[in-house]
Structure formats: structure tokens, C-alpha cells
Image (cartoon, rainbow, N blue to C red):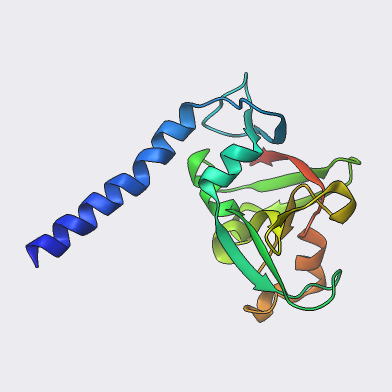
Length: 168
């Protein structure tokens, strides 16, 4: 019993250590996602900038689902929006997501915690190109949770995402 408890505590500490170190790190590769606005943690001026490697370090979360924009059931891999919100000290408000063509959409911060969407960077094991709705696409668990299978949620599933502005 004590050994199991110690193992659990050690695993918990090890799992949280990379996130603490991660918060202080600046991107070293091409920036693919920028958070700005009402955020508590920054790494590049008054923004939090992420390269793909940084997102991969935090990610690995998988949603297997169909979408209204693709054929069949696909596997999407990325980082949970809730994990990024926690790292950046975002608890409430609205994410205003922008695509590379300046298309924008409002996503309540509560969606990140209620539905656990991911910011996907891979589809079926391959990094997504701009041509394939990448490099980043907000994916909800459409097939798992009927509440995410609505026109409103579909409208929040922005692809070619490159920045999120947090408004309270």
C-alpha cells in the first residue's frame, strides 16, 4: 500500500515537472500558435508563443471521431485546450480564435473544460498541412459526446488556427 502511494506521488511529481519547466521556455522553432490578451503566463513579450515541438510536449491526447468535413472515422492528435488554459492561467472568458486567413470565431473558455477539445496537429498519425485544414485544427469529441454534435460546436471547430486572443 505504501509503495503504491509512493509510486503514485512520484509519478504525479514527474508528470507535473515538465509543465513547470515548459512554462518558462520560449519557442526555438517556427511559431505555430500564439495566445494573447488576458493570460497570466507569457514567454514572448506579452504573448505565449508555441512552436510545434512545444505543443507535442504538452499533447499526445487523441480523439477518434468523424467530422462533417471529412470522410469516415479519423484519429486526431493534439494538446487539450484545457491543458493550455491551465498553463496560461485562463479560467474564464472567451477565446477568439483566428485562422491564417483571419477568419475568426468565439469559443467560450468553458468549452475547454466541459468538452475537452484538442488543438490537433496530427490526423491519422501525420502532421496536417494548410491544404488539409492544418497545421492546427480545434477538434471536439463529436462522436463521443452528443452535446458536441451541433451547428454551434461545429462553428467553433476552427481549422488553420494560428492565434487565440483571450477576452474576459
